[in-house]
Image (cartoon, rainbow, N blue to C red; front, side, top):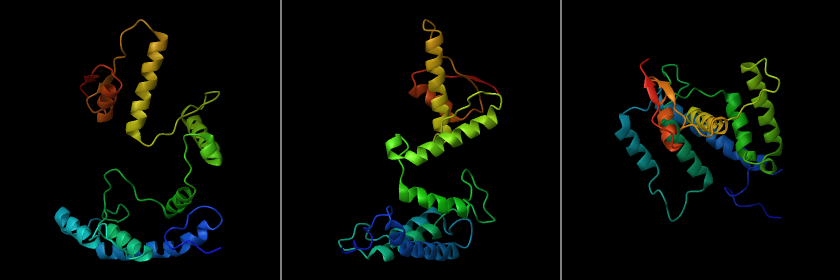
Amino acid sequence: MSAPPAGTALAGGTNGPRALRPFLDTVLDALTTGAEDRAGPLPPGGPDAVARTVRDACHPLLPAHGTGPHAALRTLVHTLAAGAADPADPHCAAHLHCPPLALATAADLAACALNPSMDSWDQAPAASALETLTSSALAALVYPRATAPDALITTGGTESNQLALLLAREAAAADHPTAGPLQIVCGANAHHSIHRSAWLLGLPEPLTLPT
């Protein structure tokens, strides 16, 4: 059986690691040279310079004939690394994102290769079991006296706030079916997602207290 063309082999299955290995060398080399060219926490020159560099490196963006998977991957990763905001640089004060551990990045590679879809068990059997164990263990840290602590994993704080307000809205409607809509009370320094979530859920404008 002939091997698939380079760049079209799948990352999963028994042959996936073999197909991934040469691309990893290309990516790691490009990450190194890109960081060396950047030489700091931010690329020099500001937005216009970065946009110009990216435009030149990616021209033509949709070529009639490609350069091949390794050349394209090397160009793309090097350009992104050279133009990145690097939270791992000792002179970087990260705004929101932290520098990832090498261990976590390696684990993320496995997750990407397996591509589990967490919306149903049949698409992610072992990952679903691991998510259940992890969320229960974290909930037990927060509620050590609970008999069966549990939690939900979301993609971030904005989604967590929206989900919390949704659950509060449904609980209030079930406990007090004849009462008016749920009224949110929050501080002036509350995250903007509280107000946006209230709007999305059809709730009254939150009552904002000075804090």
